Amino acid sequence: MLDDTIAAIATPLGEGAIGIVRVSGPEAIAIAEKIFVSRTGVDWRRQGSHRLFYGLVVDPDTGQPVDEVLLGVMYAPRTFTREDVVEFNCHGGIVPLRRTLELVLQHGARLAEPGEFTRRAFLNGRLDLAQAESILDIIRAKTDAGLAVAMSLLSGELSSRVRRFQDQLLGILAQVEADIDFPEEDIEVASREDLKNSVLDLMGDLEELIHQARFGKVFREGLRTVIVGRPNVGKSSLLNALLREKRAIVTEIPGTTRDIIEEVVNIRGIPVRLADTAGMRDTDDIVERIGVERSRELVKAADLVLVVLDASTGLTSEDRAVLELVEGQKGIVLINKSDIGDGEGLARQVADLYPDKPVEVISVKTGYGLSKVEEAIERLVLGGQATASQMPLVSHVRHKQALVRCYEHLQEVLRALSAGENIDLVAIDLRAAWEALGEITGDTVAEDIVDRIFQDFCIGK
Ligand code: GDP
Image 1 (cartoon, rainbow, N blue to C red):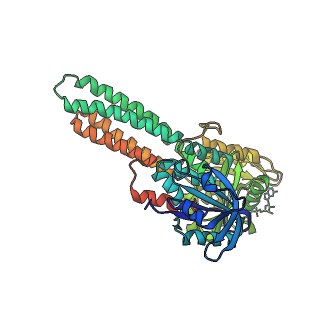
Image 2: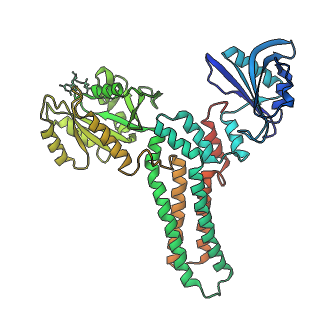
Image 3: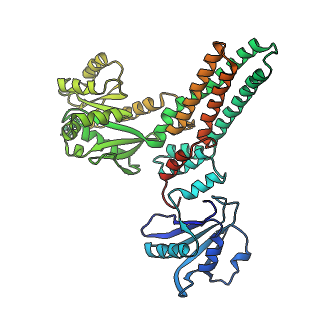
């Protein structure tokens, strides 16, 4: 499949100053020769790589000019896909872009699948799989921190860490295989202890990475947050206050379900996705609006639940029901309306009843305590472990799962070593651990997983 030439519009459709038709593959240059006419008389084919040429896209069949463009020419292998690449920088309108794309397709290219340019970059060894995944993260980053995590992934920090682990595993495997090959040599007891220690070292490092994944995912995907509480405690006021205070609302993501939209606010660099159930801002309450079952699901799926109570009314049975709903869940209890009630008193009561939940006294009306809410969110997410300068290396569930699988195989290795089991068995698990790591970089990953990863990309990327 890699011997054909692919093309796509690489910029969003709509009106813009420029739009780009990107072409990659062995026919890219030949296609440009057919449909691009230089306006400066330069023989662009005789110039070097990575240059821009001014001219027209012309339909060779009719001689009709289609658009005035800058043609970018990049010869393999120093390109994103490691193939010949040309890019038509057209005017950013739907018609000139479509017409240019049509001409490209008529003269030897086929339409690219989503993510196919990046996939070629991966298949041709320009990027490993984790780096390829980071590109989508960069495009979708919601905050500076999210972007920094994605850039670190692109730079290969995780990949090189994983490769170091793989090297260590190979070292251990070599020792084990020496044992298999020369079993009669009388070194076994000592070497089994040594092997165990090397495996334990590696497991410690893995554990650290797996632990980081927890907040890495938050930086990448945002902290899914819901606000719950009985009617009139101030949920919508709180949502509005958070949205208003944070001018840096980055984007609005359509929610997973029809009647819920989410907005992302940037709280101390953490992208916090606030579920706004339809109508919540029209003062209705989640539970009332979408039903107990659905709100339970929403709460279950959340990374963080903000439970709002009303200081002016004290703790009611409904409040207790809400608190039960978030039992075992990461949550912060916010005692609102402290301007008209005994916030501290209610806070003490709640802290006694639910000692596992942090409690903050606030007043949305006066703004009191809102910065403490932000602090509490930050504390909960980072657990005092990381700061923006200490980016988590692992931010994808897929990567975390591979690390966990590797870890589990190593546990098995330890068990087998301790139980004095056949050294062949130890070798099998060591190899499996090595392969689990290879899924991250794509060295050992199955085709269908690769397919799934690139399906999420947009066409032209
Ligand atoms: P929801 O039903 O939980 O979404 O509650 P709302 O946000 O609609 O608030 C209910 C009422 O409480 C509104 O009249 C708000 O203006 C008022 N309210 C919200 N927060 C505060 C607060 O901190 N202090 C006071 N005094 N009133 C508040």
